[in-house]
Image (cartoon, rainbow, N blue to C red; front, top):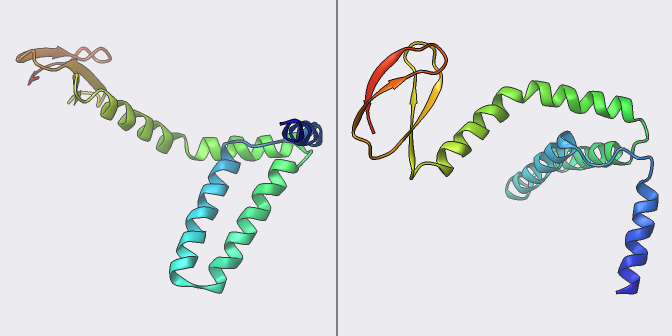
Length: 137
């Protein structure tokens, strides 16, 4: 137990002043794992090189001391993937609440509207555009 705490303490001291892991680094690691699996199936040397380059760049970012540049890279990644992440988070919420609620899209403005299940035929008013439409729950 003492050895693990010493190793952890040395690693923490080493990481002081370094950028660490962010969303873009996690994405790079995920892509490198996916490409690694694909390279195992296809057995292509080009894919092996791509895996190594992705891993090197990911670790370079984690151990970098240039906070501003790494932060800017992460913000660019977050900006470019905002719509995809928003869509996936919405779908995850829909799946989690599937048993208790039903989701409809407003025909007027496209807003997602959540209504409780089992209420029969109801009149739904969109909170965004005040459009009214009737649906079965």
